[in-house]
Amino acid sequence: MKNINEILLNPVRMRIIQELSTREAATANELCEKTSDIPRTTLYRHIKILIDNKILSVISEEKVRGSLERTLALNVQEISKHNTIENGAQNAFGFLMSNYGKFHRYFNGENPNPGEDKIFLNNTIMMMDDEEFDQFTEELRSLLLKYSFETKKGRKARDISIISAPVEKD
Image 1: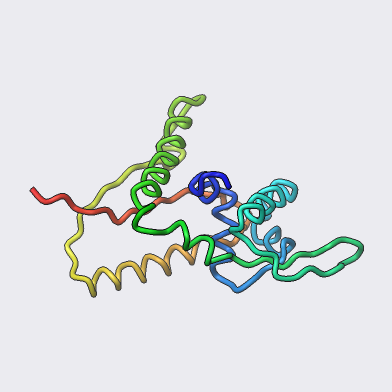
Image 2: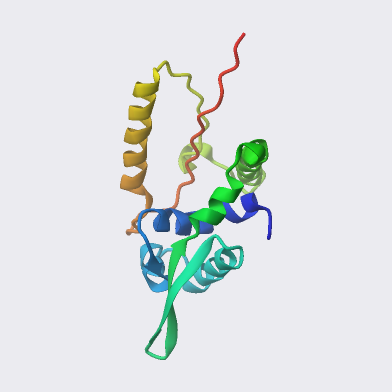
């Protein structure tokens, strides 16, 4: 198996995982419809990588007009094996380095224009008790879901990363 961060933090694979996280299962064709801005062959290649690394499971196969249509589901058990306290620092590092790589490639690419491309960094310390924080994260989750999945004319993929980090005590 490849490094779990390399597998999960790829933008195309992340969109597949996000889509499947909102439902029990989906066919590859349904995933293609939801992510119509991604070429079908590219999507199938990323689905194969997720299956090969046991992130997705094939829960059924059916012949449809001469081809095999797979129904896929997230393999939550496999994903959970990597989401442990022991792997926490490594997972955080992989996440941060993946984002650093995106910024590095962007700013060293041709004609970076953060204003036009709506690229920004923000860090905010918020004062909340646990109940307020739970409410905040639920509202944030709803907002993210509202804009996350549907491909429509004029929409383009935007990579939004949110971190709840430990606050260092002075």
